[in-house]
Image 1 (cartoon, helix red, strand yellow):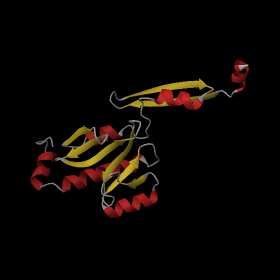
Image 2 (spheres, helix red, strand yellow):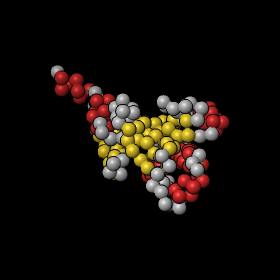
Image 3 (cartoon, helix red, strand yellow):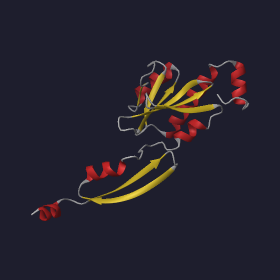
Image 4 (cartoon, helix red, strand yellow):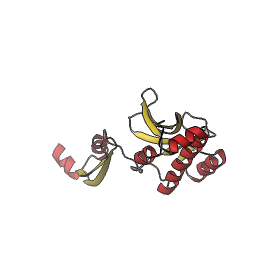
Length: 173
């Protein structure tokens, strides 16, 4: 009886793209299943599904950037001159889900009004910080622009001497 019931279930085909940031590798997998949800959840365990795989390199490539992981917050922090300019926040499943960036308050408010995937900064000052859903639909060029502006805003808050040292490559933080 059980095999007859299984034969009546619809067969679903789907493809999954995994991105493993530590290894900087994509994996593709096509699955044929009658149990979509359970199979998909099993295959996604330990993989990150996000729309911006270039983000890690973009953040780390800025002059003078240091990166660390704050275990108690579940955040990967990107700093310049010892000051935070970006944080990638993990969700309850341990998957990267948000990037939080600093912006001019007026620009941040405008972008939050334009995009549902841009929200007030998660656990941050809601006036200056904005979080972007990494599984959302914010255009790549806009997110790159937000990253650059956040970096420049924080860098600009450092002393002129510190800015010069960072931009000339004489300082690591």
